[in-house]
Length: 320
Image 1 (cartoon, rainbow, N blue to C red):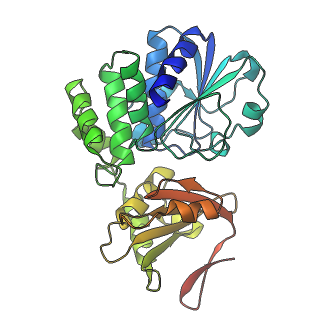
Image 2 (cartoon, rainbow, N blue to C red):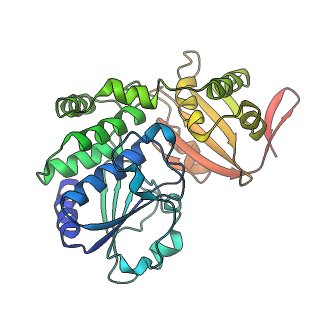
Image 3 (cartoon, helix red, strand yellow):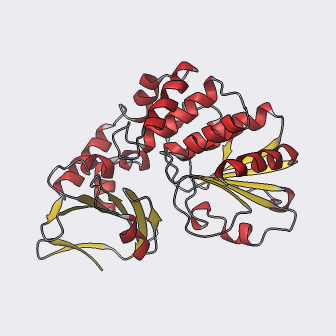
């Protein structure tokens, strides 16, 4: 069904008159790379599109082709789009377009490209592969199945999505296929050193200060052999860190060799707490914890959001 849907989706895209592309709020490297790869394809096919993300694109991903074409303002007439394509969104809520998508007109179809486990059903066609290391790897399969040329721009997008979502090939999601595709993308013109320079080796002083605070707040729950750290709004304000500075902290701290996994709790501006769960232990599935808290994700990397604020009482962090 996965590869059959690639063919069906391709025909739908080719027939579409106007396409709406969307990625999740506070986009990571995989999300930005996915939409940029799709923009490059649609422009080659001369298909009208509108690319949307409710959040600004992080500065460290602006090297990717077509990022200047991603809008954070909604178009006036959403009903004018006959095809809606969410990329790497994980769930309907992360598109930030719940009412628009659920209330879409009969002529509007939804094709979902993702590598996250299915949370809810809202699309007409799913291009989903949970074994893929990134959504750009899913897009690679889509291009290959439909004999779509992968040029240097698309290769750069695909490799960026893979490298950022695998923690530079350190996470358990890295497979033989992931390495093979990455090698092919380099042959097609993608420059891994340049990608790493932009996405990883670009830490600011404020960002490093925040990482230091996250390490300083680190505690180990000996009962469950799990590490826990927190990032408060005060931490972010005092360090002067930005959204992209926070990216990668949970993955880095999950490298602790004496624990089964890591939970990072971070205060958001809207009064919620964002939880990030990471593990490299074959016997631990952190998605079960995330699902129980209304979130989701992969067995080795998941997340959730809950209401509350972080407080430090009796030498431990708590949520109130």
